[in-house]
Image 1 (spheres, rainbow, N blue to C red):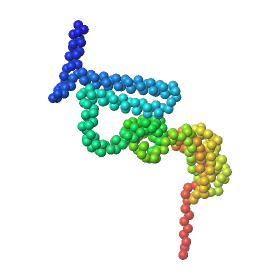
Image 2: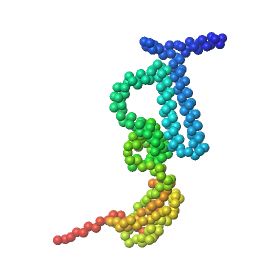
Image 3: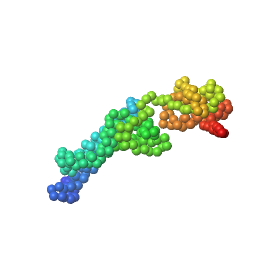
Image 4: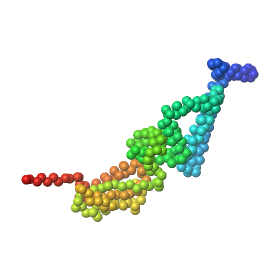
Length: 281
């Protein structure tokens, strides 16, 4: 009975699905391909669980751990794909040698794509940009969520998902707000009408800034009298905050406090004015 079962299984695996000249595709080949795919997924799942658990236990940087896993994932899939090609009868060395001219043509046509892929490898290996980093790209503030082989994905302050070609990150000027200490210095410009009490204005600006709960170090809040503007006395508020991604909301809150205190103290914010003198002849 067992022998008959083995015979049936063997005959099923040896069943020929189709044949082209000397090449034939059997059920056994399909089974091996599926097994390689499943085993590869399981191996990657175990590796992911292991390295991310290790990251949590040792408090390692999440971005570094993600970059390491991405590199491992690509290497494992390349090995698995090469084995699948060998299984179906395609010799990798012969394929590469025979398609060299074709690869050159494809490379010229897909030059930008290859550039993005190489940039992705650089990002993952250098780890100059990591997951959860906050970048300023083309004037837009983006929090990186995923670094892929060709593109990276992030969200901006409007919660819009942005897909960024990796070459844009590696070849352009990019500000990484996360590379420095957690707190960053920001500034708010304020103008008041001529004739205002400068000392009172500076006091109100400092009090208004220090009232906000997200200000990191209130001792480092600095108020500067910058210039005599065309229509106003110009001041600048300098403060530190860890809320880099939502800093515009924080600035808005501080401006509201300033506006309220200005109204309470009869300090006006001027609008540009122009005097026109008409000379009669």
